[in-house]
Image 1 (tube, one colour):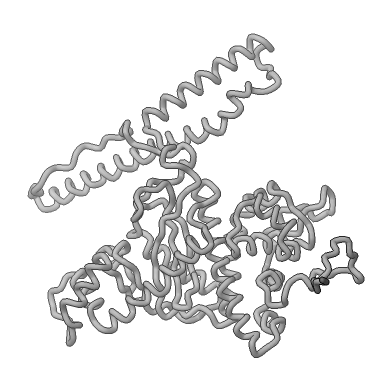
Image 2: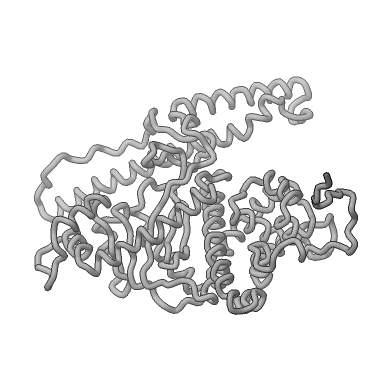
Length: 467
């Protein structure tokens, strides 16, 4: 019996030289990113390299930027994984032109250019605007907790941190005395002992934790003194003593039970629906498309102080991207509600639609009472006026867009692409990583828009029209 199988000859040579162009279809994400990065202004990247041709060869910044953007788009952020894929994956090999940067090179490039990578955000927004994305009539603001590259178990009390710092400093001093006796005063031995060399970075982090707790205690004491001074000034102006308990005298000492994380001192303990995590509060402003027009990472556990800074960032990014249309309305959940936020809103700014209670309570209120009609009654507080506006048919329709925009974006980034934990440490590094995640979200939206257009036009013509 003779089987009719295709031959498997792994020693067969190519009859013609192979081309990278044959490896991927023309509408693949890798080709799109290569074409999208080409017109970007990368002078800030290149300025950090020597321009005289001396020294060892470096990888082209345009190639490295494209490599990182593609890796983040497909949910790969590990430098070691990226290196392996540059050998095994066709798309990665096309982007690198069959080069294989090692993990240290990838990690150092990301670290060295973290500010420049974050600043690509507005350039990507400009490309999205050229494609017709970015409906800025109504935007939604929200925050999500992203785990830090640190464990809850790494939190230490102020007393424990202070004692460990003092112990390590005593050990270092003893080592210095021993080396002075062995090599003479002012002379240096070969290197620090191994046990101290490996603990040097830990000592720096412990000192950072100690400084942070002391600074927070000093700021709290200053705020308490300001409250006392304000109360005293009011009593002197009115000639009457205020009722109620007098504020306590400021205490600049640190609470011995106050905690800080010795792995990532910038991270904070955050409350989520699944419990407490060590992490950061990642913010995003999202349009109806949905396109992210502003992104930032904060250490604040709640969102109440992020409303106006994030809106200002969104408006600045839109202006930089050439978007002339203003934001007309802003939607946010109860985490952003405060009377101060409503009072600080400029008269010519976007209209605010801020929930004043949790989602289930708000939906229940909408079911229990019909939408209000007619003029707004006099004498309502700011909270009551906001609740009434959200109960109107217009308010319900606008607020409903929040669950259709910003929440799915967080789901796509954290669940679909697996970015529920930062890989880097420190507020600035995590902020850069979050912006990189958000701009790659926008690139994926842009790529899908280009593919839709290429159904009627050639793909290369569609991409060229964005440059």
